[in-house]
Length: 293
View 1 (cartoon, rainbow, N blue to C red):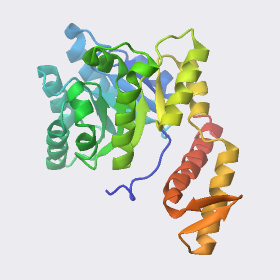
View 2: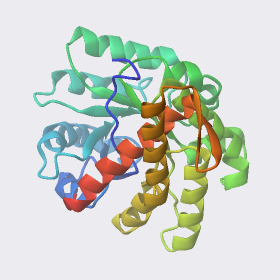
View 3: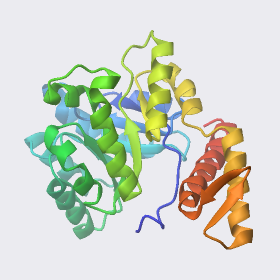
View 4: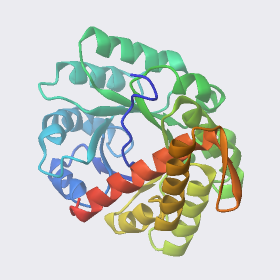
């Protein structure tokens, strides 16, 4: 599947649910988020890895909830025994697994190896890759292009700050965030920012989300369902911007030219791709939100 062929879908928010708690999957799916991720990694103690693996693969693909919500299972690092066991469970799973998330990636070969294995087993599982190591940040462009199964790059700010030996502030991580956005945009995939970890600081979350959207992220994680509605609004294009985008798209469709003046501003044809994406995300987000999730 090429970039042009990949369907556009809103990925404004995601939320984790521990793999050990399949009872939480339907609640998470009904929370209004665009993505639910059953976590086999950080949220699971070493002694519970096996139980989490079994529960996530058995229950998340068939859990009650809106069909439009993307269902992902975050595997353990593929360079670990738990990660290898997760891959075995993925290949043996009786249900269709829509997507898996790969943490602690260091280079494109990890992504390619899993992608090739999925090809071999004729699985259509998609891939989401977390950029959270120094090695991954350096290789972000190559990772983003490692497989046409990749749907999004996630920015893992907590681990990234530890690897960079910096504070987890916006300014300290702006360079790293920018590299992730650059790599994702070049590959035509989504870029999704790390959750804001202070549940009581709503204004701080909104500020950071707005900065993320301005930088080019298409969504941001939530640590609690009460953050989801706010984040969805931040990452949904506003009506005025969408109206302008439609005006430009219509003008170019009628004009058959490389540049036009619309509303007193000179606009060149290369912007059409971003405008078309904005309109598509807006329309699909409205459909989803009006359907109540």
